[in-house]
Image (cartoon, rainbow, N blue to C red):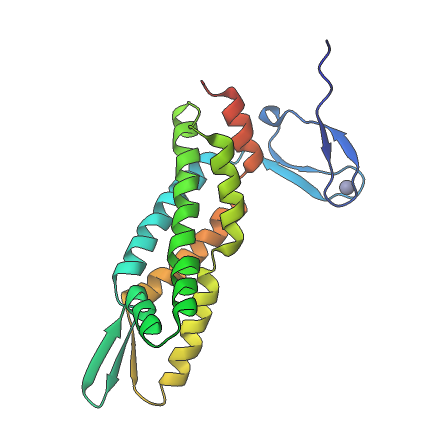
Length: 205
Ligand SMILES: [Zn+2]
């Protein structure tokens, strides 16, 4: 039985193209009809994604363990971490907000980064990770719910408003969350799911 030719549809104009051998190409592959970028090749995206995933995990650990912000009100200093903020929200009868804060800022980014590491590290070492398709699907489901940037925006608005009432001292965690936001943005732009599947096909079972 002959294998059907692999076809790729342009995401802009739906033109069907025969699959291009990415290993032979360098640079970007564009649609011949509308010139939309179909994919980039020759970027070592797997290694770079793995490095950024490790960096993001380190930043996430620091961001959740160190204080986000400190307040100095008439000589009385208070500071809080993201867990402290969630605990306070829970005590103030806002359990839904507390759960959302922890889920979108800590738990889901952690799941997303662990899932990425689970897929990328074995592939980098040349073998197939266990449960590849299930972890891949979990990664796609988790991605829209990681909202570190919304949290950063909320904290910045609160800091500006609080600065009229007290001396506001940004903690180390706020810088780490800022860096994490940038690393996650770069990571989501360079992770090449196509390359992941191709590496998976070429790897040892
Ligand atoms: Zn096109």
